[in-house]
Image 1 (tube, helix red, strand yellow):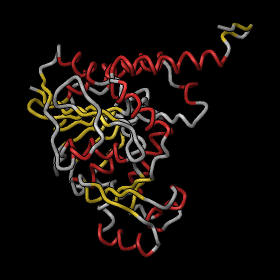
Image 2 (cartoon, rainbow, N blue to C red; image 1 turned 90 degrees about the vertical axis):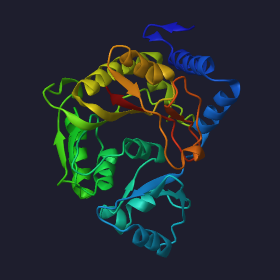
Image 3 (cartoon, helix red, strand yellow; image 1 turned 30 degrees about the vertical axis):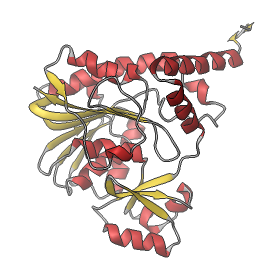
Length: 314
């Protein structure tokens, strides 16, 4: 290992971080799964979007996409999620549909938690880490803008971006943006459903074509994320109403941020895993999980790596 007056050589630091990822993946998965994950890390992922049914009709958007020679395919688990085959994000951002908020560019994996949560009109719903607002506005659309949604975001700049997207997607009537650290939400508040898409290491979204990827992914980030996740999940179960359900998700594929966090919290809380089931689940590229009923998506050319658990408070 080379040492300079400024500390460890950057090349050696990057190598250390890369080895950390390889080691932790090899401990958790078989060689074939690790190979699939690395293949996914190197893929150029397709652009995907969600039709915003608050502002547009599904069939009308699909017709206009075809008229603009935008090729797309559908997924079996959602009639508003589209995979774009021949255009870039920039191309779509230049369309009238994007400008009007009729479509929202969103990864397929990140559309799964709101669908699995099954929000209902009239419910009090909390999105604990809401920016930039994709899942918040998706919940609004799923409930026909008739739920009472509190969207939390600690960072001022990100909170402003959240407000902008909520307004653009036509969800202002059902969403209240709260600029606050969700860990400090008052315990006298209570919610019918909670989405906790927790801050994480992003191990499911790594791009190995980016030479800087291991400058920001490292063991310290994983450990810091796990501590935050544990505290947030404890808080979520504290303010979730008894008998009600929540969803915990991350864009990580590491069990130390996923099943381990959930199981650690459930050791001290009166709650249980609700096995995830929905039409189309068998079409997902799934990774094995240690906890029955949870779900972990393998990164590939269509999906980001993603973990989801559904929990009921007893």
